Length: 184
Image (cartoon, rainbow, N blue to C red; front, side, top):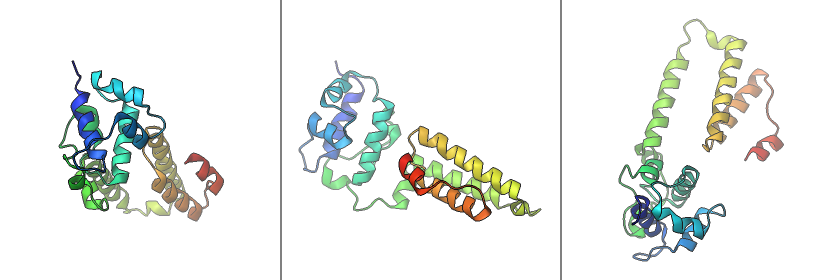
């Protein structure tokens, strides 16, 4: 008896394939995802109730790199959402757009966070932003949030660049280029 993952795995094998109507083999899919995934591990997935979370994140990131739409973390882990369409030629976008990303659950969530932060931080009734203490607190809080999210495997590179640039402008210590390269 095959588990709940089997149908999603079959759709992924078909969706990642560059050939119409020909799905990837487990070995080809393992190579597509990266060295941390083996063919033997993929062969065991159909008996599982869900994909391992770290592998699900890799699958979603590889799908986005390839322009494969409909592959969200929610779909890979729980089957929620439309998922990739059958036929590789139909599902590949030439370039993922901001509009496409914002329609996915994570894109909507990120956009809502950005709007809330902008609304909350734009209030400057008493000139709070001129206070060095407030600027330092906000920068360190954003850096701390970015570090925590990076541990959860979110790419927070732009947030780190923003906070490093801002920190440099107000005289806070900034990571050297070597430190930034080591984190990536």
